[in-house]
Image 1: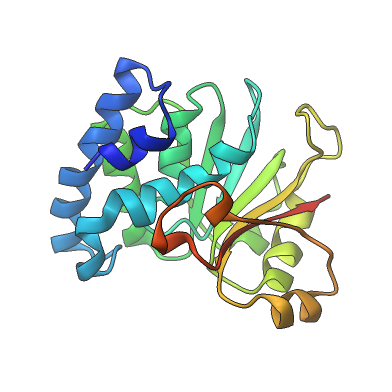
Image 2 (image 1 turned 90 degrees about the vertical axis):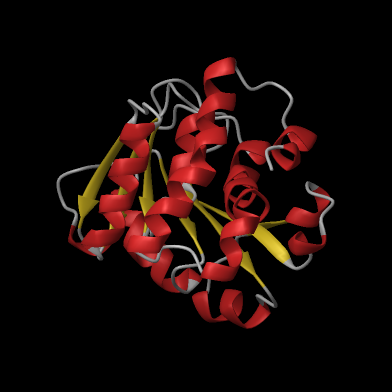
Amino acid sequence: MMDILQKYFSDFTETQAKQFEMLYDLYKDWNTKINVISRKDIDSLYERHVLHSLAIAATIEFRTGTEIIDIGCGGGFPGIPLAIYFPDVKFHLVDSINKKLLVVNEVASAIGLQNVTTQHARAESIKDRKFDFAVSRAVASLKDLWYWSKPLLKKLNKNEIPNGLICLKGGDLAQEVSDSGLRPKVSPLEDIFDEEFYREKYLLYIER
């Protein structure tokens, strides 16, 4: 199952490879108690969830000490795979449904992630923290995601690209982008991953 990750990423450390490997059994077990991934998708965990999350890592290299908020993290995507990939980057995973964060905390603890914190909250209620980037995976419209994330972004940049929102979305985005009034940089994921699943899937980046 890990083969699909190693098809596109050849530089995992032994620790990272082990952590990625552990995700399947952990999510399969937790998913029977708290449904965070659709039942039919669990066997495609690596292709449809882990690799999808790592599209961000394939596109952007975050520097040590970067702080990232995952808005509406659900069961931990894209935050958990990114936290494995970037052990020197801090990830704050936020969701309004507490039981999903229970899964995130248990998975992070089981695989020994030291760079993940969680918060039971709506993004718009967070007032006391700032981040370099916000990431999200198809949890809301682009307009809403930008409205929530913009106040949470630091002004000072420490990465090669300016601070901003990075989100993963699929389908025909023309109307959604138009409604947002924003001009995101849109990168087709099929240019990165040669899998049928990634047709009409995109990474969108909006600079702060």
